[in-house]
Structures are given as C-alpha cells and as structure tokens.
Length: 117
Length: 115
Image 1 (cartoon, rainbow over the protein chains, first blue to last red):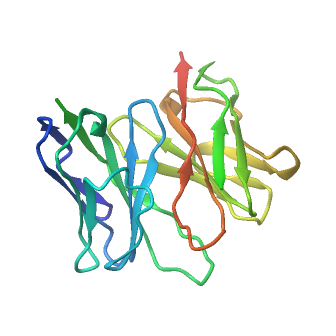
Image 2 (image 1 turned 120 degrees about the vertical axis):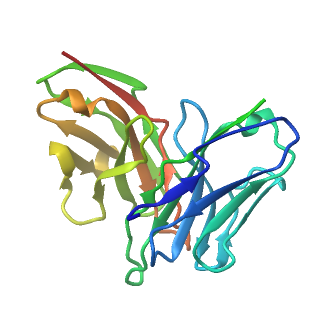
C-alpha cells in the first residue's frame, strides 16, 4: 500500500499481558515516530527512529514500553505487563528524508486501539 | 519547551456558515505550526502548515490559517462549512530547538456541522 499501515487495528489484553504493535512505514521513509493518544486527548510523542537508530525515547512512559526498528523499516512497539492506564490508540507516523534543517510532513497510520481489561 | 492550547473542545456550526477553530501556541524558538484533521477510524491528515514563509497559509478543502506572532495564535478558518468537515481537528507545533523532531499536539477541537 501507499500509506503507513499498522497492525493489529484493535487489541484487547488482560492486565499483565505483553503486547506487540506493528508499524509498516511508507517505503523509503527514514524517520519513524510513535505516539500515544488517550481517549479525548491529542496524540503524545513516545519515541523517534532515524533508520534503525532510536534517537529519542523521552516520551516512553515507563520501562515497560520498548520500541525497536532493527532493519530500519518495520517497527514494533512492545508493552510489557500491560496496565489499564495503557489503554489508548497507538499511532505510528513516518516522514521522508529532507534537506538539512528542512521539515517534512509526518504521515500517520490508522492506529492500533489497545484496550486493557 | 513548546505547547499548544486549543481554546474550544467542541465547535458546532451550520452547513454553509464560517468555521473558526482557535489555537494559541508557546514556543521558545521560531516554530513550525500545523493543523491536522482526524476523521473517525481514519489516520491523521495534514490540512496545512506554516514554516516561516507567508503568514496566511492555505490548505486543503478550503481551509486557511493565519500565523500571528504578536498574538501567538494560529487560528483555522473556512468560509463555508460542509457536512464532510465534521471531524476532530488538532493544532500542532514543532519548534526548532535542538534535534527534536516530534510534534506536540493540542487536545483537539471536535467540529460538528449541522444541516
């Protein structure tokens, strides 16, 4: 497909379970972002990759959250020992390489809605 | 540090009347500003962006926004609302300090268009 894809679209987990959320960015996009969107709120930044390097993980809320992008393409966001407060939509975005100092549009996927019971 | 305040959580207009969605920002450096729209079960879509060129920015679907530095505002407008404009709208800021590339979103404004 031409856009950013995410899977699964919906995930229900029991408290304490581990989950893995997948993001397929647009082909050729070197930058990849994860955001968390709680109900009724705007998305909040979690982490950022440039190719396979995780350059910023300042938004990850706890050490239960882990993200990887081993080959610089597909990324996985893993949440260990899920808690009810982890319930949210997890959004992935990618952007193309640009000129130094330039700003490229971030293209968003449809998100994965995680519900922790 | 950067932040965005969307002054209205809900806006309701009649079809064919003007739309005004208000946004104020705070940024330590000259920011880039965006408006994104989110339709139910769809991904966020960029409406328009300001990156220090013209202060009046035209976007898709007839939307415009004006950057006013003196007021630290970036309000979104449209002369005539359509039913298809009903969605959640997010004002977004990205400043250029350090190497930060992430976007900072406002809490969103839900636009309802009445027939």
